[in-house]
Image (tube, rainbow, N blue to C red; front, side):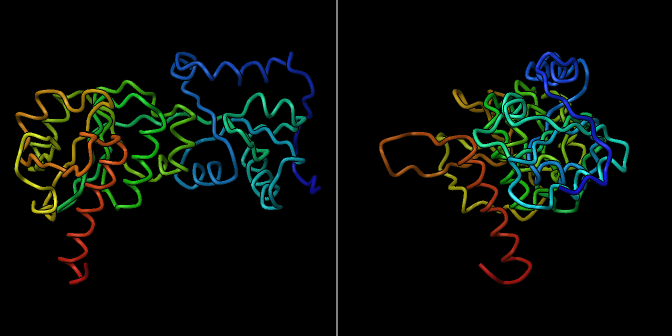
Length: 277
């Protein structure tokens, strides 16, 4: 093992540093301390790449999947991050994954406001209203990144975007997608100010989503898992659309519906720019 970086060995679950990390499982503790937990080589490197400040890093070399982890550890130690080696059983207790990869870090949460969002000509935006499940929010971030979304607004949040399960489900897309957290009123005001049309999916329209022009500035709005968008998003939207359902079930998982709508927008934009479907 390359030991050319400074680290401290921890071996007891009674250690105050270990207990401090375990407390971050509680949302209230995360928000009070403005800290979250990152897990695995990909999450740590992407978080660094996109400007998150890592505070502590814990590693169990017996669980590593390769050799690149040591390079990451050295770069963190050189940057002043406190690095700790722990036995596998302690890392497993800190981990959220079923199969931990031997790297866990704490990182300072960033604050995200509407002022942070880029205003792009013919931009594509995503509004997630009160999405509750971390896995769904993470999947939506992943799709937003893949479809080239210019910004995502977490509206009237019920899920902590820095919940480690959101980060895990997003596979690091959380760090790549421009984000804002805002209320419904703030979001409507921002979208109207910048002349961004609002698209809402509803079964109560004849407009099939593939027949609507999604190449201009548009924000795709999606709602909660149980009840969908609230009334204001349905009545004040500019583009009500329906995703046809051919089976017996009358609704899609919110992350699935989001992906369908985002990729239709990406398909139309690719066709307009390059003449390719």
